[in-house]
Image (cartoon, rainbow, N blue to C red; front, side, top):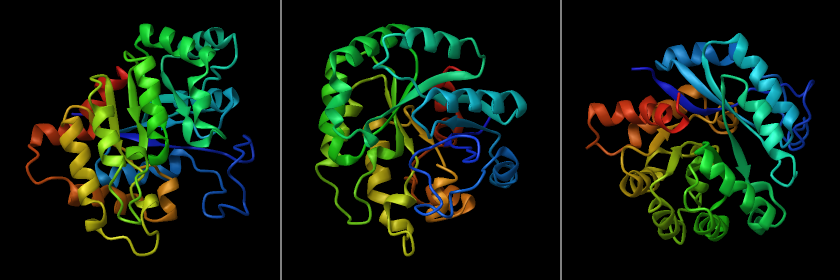
Length: 278
């Protein structure tokens, strides 16, 4: 079985403007991160390929990632960005889809000044068209934005979505609700998946321990089942709180002991391959 890290990034701040990524705000992250940096880590962890995910809200970065994917076999596919407020979004999407490694795009509710922007009629109409295509969509939102995510799913119930980073629950504070109840409702939509990614950056960066995450991971496994969850490292963002190997080993330690070998194979690759139609 091909083992897949379903969520990581490569970026080059000298070539692409990421907006959020500055030397002052993120000195650890403000440098070129490329496949040559990650591939030794993947090999050491027994991972074969990755899903490369957008980190900038413009189309230029998507083309940059697609270029990288042509050069490196380890990149299984690219999740880009698409401006759904642009009346010509379908033309841009078609140009992306002409590339064999383009998989889908990511909705960045997390960064919207007002999360309800995602419910604008022009955006809902676009997402209904995308749902008809059955195109994979990543969605990043924070725990307090989940009511908007639920409203989106009520408007576009057929959308194929994977929730990134468990929707960023309050792990550092140890708070479980209302995140847990809202995620259970999200999981009731059969085409919604969830990435077990971004854990350490929601905890205490300096003093996290495995037991901080156990309840959150167990809840996601319970409500989504073992066929709609996938492993993602969120490298290099995870470096704010831990190395690639630490993140990879952490998930293995906090998963329920009851998972079978087949279920673990699905978590570490099979489910990502199915969701992204690899």
